[in-house]
Image (tube, rainbow, N blue to C red; front, side, top):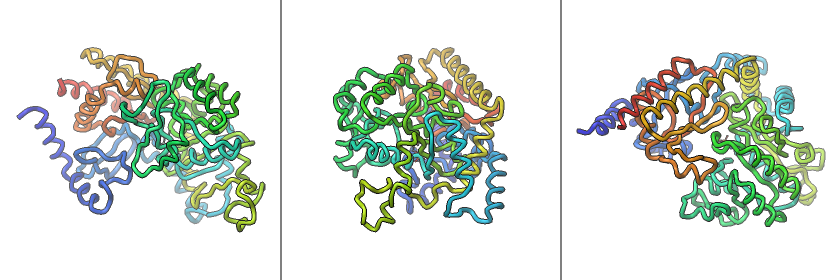
Length: 458
Ligand code: PLP
């Protein structure tokens, strides 16, 4: 029996409870998962408990968690300061939610306005997706143009207009400096493909050319300043993009759902010194609870103010859509429990040394992993910025989606399955997010597990 088959049997044996739970879930949940990205073969691992940097599955296996709820849990699982804030808030409020304005909304909005250079005002949502969607609507209302430009390989939430060319097949992707708009899901109408223009990331000349040619149609450019949380925009690219969008009357939207609190507290915009017109936040902002926020310049944000005129629900059809305040709603927007968790998280990150320590640990792990693979003569680089990085098997420079697609993804996935068996958790192929509570022992155990995994795969 080959070593690989033995290990597969080992995985099956260790995760019998997960397999059983997964089979049950599949009967009532499509594919057994509540988000497609959570699925992997032969079956996802079903979790039962979590604390600090550790996850425990239903079979009692422990894992050091590097997925951290897709980067949201920057303080790890169940941080005491966040728990205290949540309990305190619920105690004070006497309920879970008011369903009316309250002071925490103001406190959090003020905090974000102080931290993010590109924000004069804020609105809260329940997810990052809703925040980017709202940003696009605002841009379109502001300048009256009807198309949006996004970058190939960038993710902004799973709705039709943005579910374009996130992970396209190379056969469909088109010219490198003029990418095609490729649908990422069945059920999307051609309308959205026709209204989304795809740009090449980190290629300012090609980007300018496309924007100039279509300046009358394009209302906004949206981007992840760090693609996928780990491929940084070049500084000159960011500056060039700001200049050209300003020149052409195009709204610039930074999607900082991942980067908002993971590079520093204040996002990519404060690090790059480039101010967008609108910024979407999410993930860390909720301290482990569902959240999103859109912030930006007052001349755009104010289009939402009900003081401008009645909105769609209250005007009774008596006003033209163009005269109404831009519509934005959500039953749970500004949820007090969520904002209490988020504020406690930000305050923790603002404590002296906390962010520096997180960045230092991340850099240490990256360096040690690179040295390790180097010793085994495996061409691998860690790519990242701040407290997120990815392990990429190529020795070529990676600046965008096309470069990334040249890396050996197969080897990466094989490695991740070995690492799962060795107690290191990330969804196979996913990036690594670090937390403030990953200990030196966790980091050493991770490096050792990588060495064992390499030896197994050789
Ligand atoms: N934008 C970016 C950059 C993201 O990474 C994500 C989620 O991964 C989203 C938007 C969507 O956020 P949510 O999953 O909270 O809707």
